[in-house]
Image 1 (cartoon, each protein chain N blue to C red):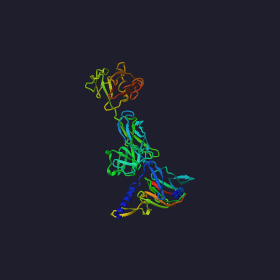
Image 2 (image 1 turned 45 degrees about the horizontal axis):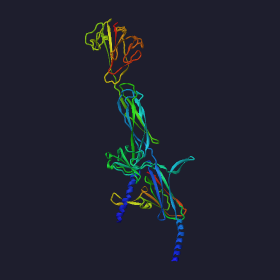
Image 3 (image 1 turned 180 degrees about the horizontal axis):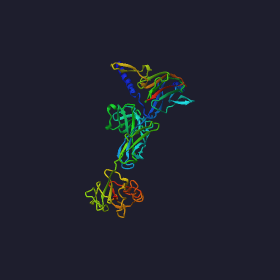
Length: 165
Length: 419
């Protein structure tokens, strides 16, 4: 019995010693969003475009969203998925999303994601037959990037643009 | 089963497609919060989130402006004023302060025409963000606005008149309440059942809704130049808002004040004093005009009187302000030309050996000396034309013609001898 107690104590000690190491060796990924817009400024007599923080926008203007992510943990983060609904009152600008990892879109408010060419739905034609239609970019409701791995200490950014309705 | 699933999927996917088609060209209300909230997941369950909010700015837009005009009867300087009502309707996507600046751009038959009034008003506005009902619309909740029942929503509050057009039908309901919808950060703005819109005109997303207000101006005619002629004034109202295009409205046709001309009765009579004519004549005094009591039997004639050289002729001139006139006659003087080639200068038959007998507007009689111009109320200068001038009426004196009030009259008389 005494031997069993000693064995249990030794096992518990080993487990407690191993726990902090396991907890510490984890990925920790954070994300931040930046909203900007392009304005034209004159520098040295030439008109150039400059990005500024989009505090206020007018209908018809474009907002550039940049999503920065960083893994401040000590282990790689796997299967990193960034999902971002296209904000209400805006519409996605075709081709504006950065090609990082696997880029997919949704037209059903994030229930399903597919590549643009596979985003289809059926409508009934005048003849009564169903026709398959490829969704246009202004119908996209969500954008998603799937990144296989972000190494410890690694960081990156994805971005897309919308137009204010 | 597979076919059913396909149909369901088609329905689900078709719905957003139709919605997008309706609002593709729509604008967004000012002060709307565009919220982007991203979620990052990793390692099969760990997540991180971040969000950013962008505010939609006010887009300058030309307000709709109209102005009313009016008619009145001129009563006197700047009286009466005519109300010109300026109606302003916002066509913007959010609230703004509009200033009405009136001016008179044209006037006729008066001096000093003017317009008063003009002020600043705040007009609310928004863009619908959802589907309403026959008695409501749905608009975004503005950033920083209150979110309780009956809150002001982008400047739209209870009792405001809002204007929107759908299917070529323009509606102007009065707001009865507002209700915040926390689930989607919108407000529903309601109006009374009595103002319900047609079921087919229920607003979807993307329709501009603007508040309408009125600003009252008062157009004043100034002082009339010619009695009996109408006065017109054209009033223009400029409506401005910071950074907005200015819009104006002009009274068309112009405001009009009608002017009724004074009705003046002016008649000259005569009688042969030396050899009175028989007949009834048209004016009657007692044995002489000096003894006038208003009901005499001495006839005077408007024509047909004859006389021989050496005989005395008495002339009576009556002037009165009568009829529909609403104005006193001002600057009144009776002028006559004594034909000195055929008759003498005026005789002095009246009390005090004076040339002129005068009955004023109150029936009070007097005799006047007719001398040099400006020396007395009456003047006679043989070489002038006219050579006999008598200032008559209230406050008439040696240098100033007087006033004959409405319904009043004056009379002068003088005598000459035929040469």
